[in-house]
Length: 409
Image 1 (cartoon, rainbow, N blue to C red):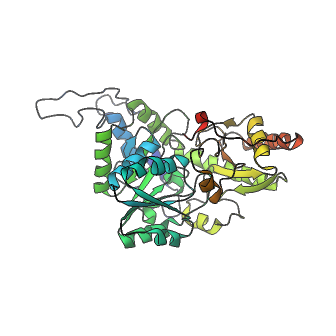
Image 2: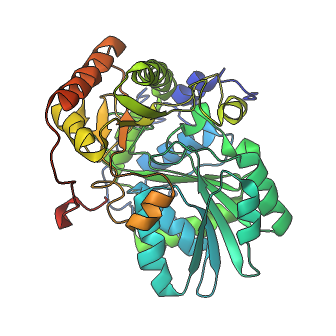
C-alpha cells in the first residue's frame, strides 16, 4: 500500500489493520479483557499472556492497529503520552548523555527534560529546529537522541523532518518525532526517515476526550523491545478499558481528521480577515511562512485541526476572548470532536520558563484552538462574538499569572 503524499487506503487500515474477529466468540468488535492475570496451562506454559502490567490482549489489539497505520510492527502503548515519552528517553539515554530538542515543544516535554532528566545527569539543548542546521550545530560527541515536534505546540512552527532525519542518520543518532498534532493520517515521519514516533493517543487518535493514552511506534524492532522493557520495569502500560476506547476511536480517525482540518482552515481564514486579530498560525494558510514545506510534508493537502492566534489588545483582550466563548470550551486538551480553547501561558506551558516561552513565540496573549467537527459556521461565529466582546469592553489592567493549580499538565 502506497502512502506517498496520499491518504488513500488509510481509512481501511484504521478500521481493519491489525484487528481480527475474536476467534472464540466471533465478536466483530475487539473484546475488552479486563483481567489483571492469566491462567497458565501448565508450569512454564502460557497462552502468550501472564500479567497485564506486561501485556494484555486488549492493549495488544490497539498496538497492532497503531502499528498497521504506519506500516510498522505493533506499537508500545502507555497510560499517557508523557509516559510514552519518558519510557523512550529512559530506553535511549543514560547519565552523561545529551539530547537535542526543538525549542517550540509541548510544555510537559520541557518540564520532563529540565526538571526530571537533568537530575539523572542527562543534558539537553533546545534549538530552533525549523532550520535543520541548528540541529546539526547542537550535536555533541555524547548526543544520543534528537527529539522534535512538527507542527510545534502551540506555535505551529514546522520542522523539515526529512532533513533532520538525514542529519541524525549521518551522525548515528536516533531521531524521534512527536506526531500528536497530525497523526499518521496527515504525516508519516517514519516514511521521512526518522526512527520513532511518539503520540499522546489521548488527543486526535482517541478523539472523544474520554481516554488517556500514549504510544511509541517504530520499524526498529530492537528499539521497540527496549521501550517495552522499560514499560515492564516501570509499570506504565495502558489500562485495558482505555485501550478498548482508543481502538474504537482509531476507526474513525481518518474521517475525523479530514473534518478537523477543513474546519481549521476555514476558521484560520476567518480569523485572518478579522481586523481585531493580528496574527494567525496555521500551516494551511497561503501566508504561512513554511507553506511549501507543509505541502511537501503533510499528506492529502490537509494540515490538521490545531491553530493558534493573537488578538489586537494583547493579553487582556485574549483573556476576554477565552472567557466569553460559548460553544468552545476552555480546557487543557486538544484533538477532541469539540472545539477547545487553551491559554498556553497559564495552562499547557505554565511550567516553561518565561524567557523560553517568549523566545519561541509563546506570548502571554497567544490562544490555541483545537478546532472541532461542529458546523464550521457555528465555530467561526462563536470566536467572532468573543473577539467582538473583548474589543467592546475596557481593557483590564493586570495580566494573568499562573497559579500552582494552573501548571501545565
